[in-house]
Length: 237
Image (tube, rainbow, N blue to C red; front, side, top):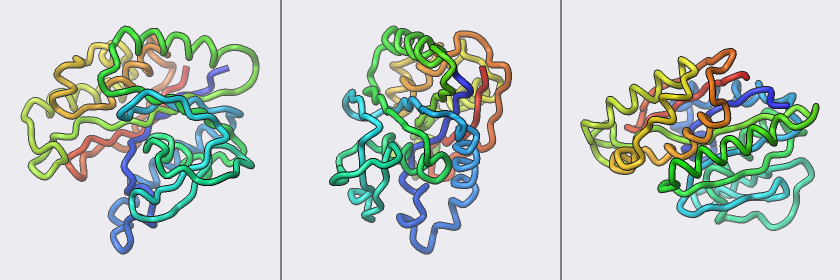
């Protein structure tokens, strides 16, 4: 039974140890992410959808580390997971594990990563399959989307500035706040690729998993502090 779908961004700067003395600059974002993670704490299982260079499925037994981002902070996707931490775990999996440990330590999280160029039709099919699986039986389950908005919103953004990104980012934010799956589904893969909106595939999986408007939609954080769109919120079926 799907109880909720949450969405959070994927910046490593969520982890205070990676920010050093600048950690306070991300307190608002971090607090919003942890609050929304807590909303999923009653779920026994999380299905996490993220985006990375290559498709992958990461089981709830996985253990990873943020070593590749500067600090050997070890995180796991499930209670009792052990073993050598994998420094090559996709960032979406690392972020999901970090959130899980701090908000829902008894929950198991399985991660499915899609490439940025994933075709819309495949995202739609995956979303529909996920919803059927999440609704199967009485076990409380949750969906967690780990995805960013456009990465070209300012001159100092990772992808520099692209004036086309502002309108697309605004439409993305409005769709998330309004609980509008149709607008998420309408994101143009070609344009999103050009403006660095690599999370497009994950957003379209979210849209397909709902199909129609959620019973409630809440956005608790929406900003672009580093020229990248970050959105935090919750949809309930």
